[in-house]
Image (cartoon, rainbow, N blue to C red):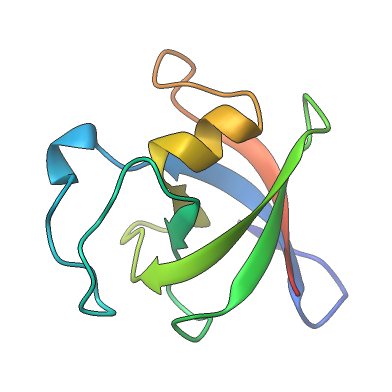
Length: 103
């Protein structure tokens, strides 16, 4: 995972939450909704809003961090299916190279 020189921006790989987790509790205590623009991150404070930019498609989306994860060094952020769709990547692609910026 690469970190940019900006204090609140990071570059790395994003993955997508499994739809099987829909309705399960997140670290924030709310229920995971695959249709909302949310994400999991290990360090950002719960409730933080983050812009996620797909470096391939150049599409971006603003998500709210409501969970912890991903719990592997390979991935930087775990996006809801709705957030992944908004920036142009799917389960079929598996991962996307992204830049994330705290708002």
